[in-house]
Amino acid sequence: MPTAASRVATFGTTIFTEINTLAQQHNALNLGQGKPDFDTPQDIIMQLVRAAQSGQHNQYAPGPGTASLCAAIVDHAARFYSMDIDPKRGVVVTSGATEGIFSSILGLVDPGDEVIIIEPYYDSYVPNIIMAHAVPVYVPLHPPAWTFDPAELRSAFSQKTRALILNTPQNPSGRVFTPQELTLIAQLCIEHDVTVIADEVYEHLIFADAQHIPIATLPGMFERTVTVSSAGKLFSATGWKVGWVYGHPELIEGVARAHQFVTFAVHHPTQEAIAYALNLPDTYFAAFQAMYATKRQLMMSALDSGSLKYTAPQGTYFIMADYSGVFNGTPLEFTRYLTKEIGVACIPPESFYSQEHAHIGHGYVRFAFCKSDDLLQQVKARLAKLKRTF
Ligand SMILES: Cc1ncc(COP(=O)(O)O)c(C=O)c1O
Image (cartoon, rainbow, N blue to C red):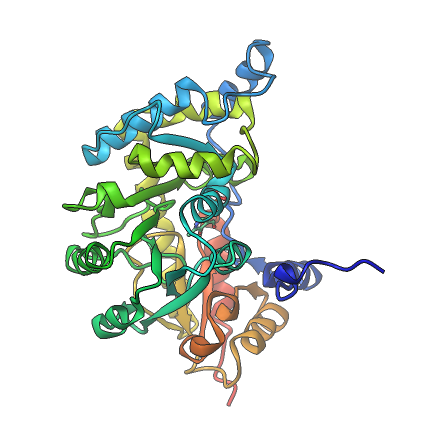
């Protein structure tokens, strides 16, 4: 009987499927998957409806993206980061950031090349690298502060290094890399002639005094960086799957060549709605950040009530919690226990680590706080029941 290809042989079903099923079975409050439990703003939804009803946007969009969305992406990058992007040759609209990252790897990395990733990492990176027949090289972040060791980063670079995937603000650690950290990464990438795939989907989710600095804005980095972002995160519309990649036209050409034979073009009416959304005034982005600042406080107070330790996230809507003071076992065992006995679901970080470094995530689970304030209050009440089990 024909079987699946060897390149996908090691890909299991994601942990999210198991946890979602378990959460449903036990009526648990689900802080597993990073998808909001509240709706996309109504005015943005209305733009989608209008675009579909207009009869102008129901056939294939241009492969690299509609003129309106490409212009909005470029304007957004100019408004927030003073970046100067070519709307015609410097942007590709993709089916979510996930496709943007995959098309970037396919378009910019050759078989046998090494790609550095910082772990724990977003779970599509490694399968993407493997499908491109490239080789992942891992640099771990060390808890509790989730910082990398500069010597470990330096030693990850070799003659074969072609790209580095940099996610800041970082899922799942909540880190926003500092100017010093970004400068070191940039120096090493320049020294070794490496391309950066900058995953900045949480660019507007930053807290306290953290500042998001796109690595493409550092000296010498624009010509070696493609920046990826996503409407899913910015506009609480993860189901719309619209993302984009922008940067120097030479690199974007590679991404666009891959993209044209992966998805060709992205859902057309949605692009019109996202163009509208990206052009919203600064007040939208400030209110979005303020809404999440409240959720972050609620989340931290819920973890306090369960005596779970954490480092306050500087960005994203994720937090890594240290359960070692209350439970003795693997992250998966703790997740099952918490879901079944306490009624709160989270994600064990095994799928965010290579085998080599999985032990670093031992004792931690990830909670997503992109949930209603009311639900986060209920989580607090449930976590208060968490008692030391050993
Ligand atoms: C770091 C990171 N990159 C990319 C994505 C995927 O974004 P999209 O839904 O736009 O494909 C996610 C989603 O959780 C993410 O956390």
